Image 1 (cartoon, rainbow, N blue to C red):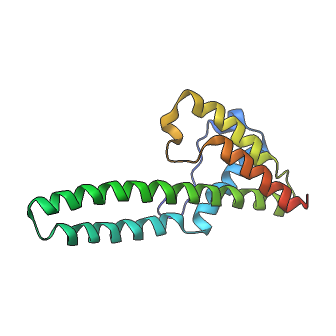
Image 2: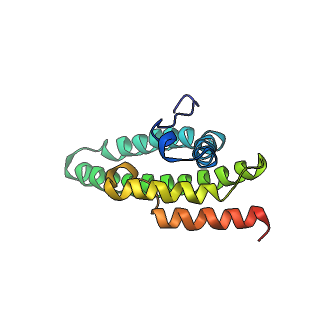
Image 3: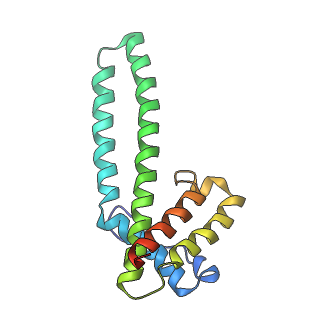
Length: 147
C-alpha cells in the first residue's frame, strides 16, 4: 500500500501452505523495501508535469502531444511495473532462504497464482507472464541455493 503497509488477500491462506504464503508476503515486503510505490508516484508526477508542459501551447499539437503522452505513459508504467514485480519476486525468494524456509515455495506459489489468473486475466494484467515469473523464481532459488 502507498503507506508502506502490506496487505495480502486472505483467500490465499485457503490455497497455499505456509511457505508459499510467506513467499507472497516476502514479495509484498520487497515492494516496500525497494520503494516501488514511491518511485511510481514520483514518475507519475513527473509524467503529468511533462504532459502539462507539452499541452501548454494549446491547439491541435497539444491534442496530439497529449495522445502520444498517454500512450508513452501506459507503456512505461507497464514495463516498470513488470520489472518491479520480478524484483519483488526475487526478494521473496531471498527472504525465504534467509529465514530458512523452502525457497522453491515461491515458484509453487506462482503456479497456484497462475491457475487463478487463467480464469480471470484482469487480476494480473499488469504483471509479467506467469511462466516467466515461475522460471525466474526457480532461477533465483537455484542461485540462492548454490545450484
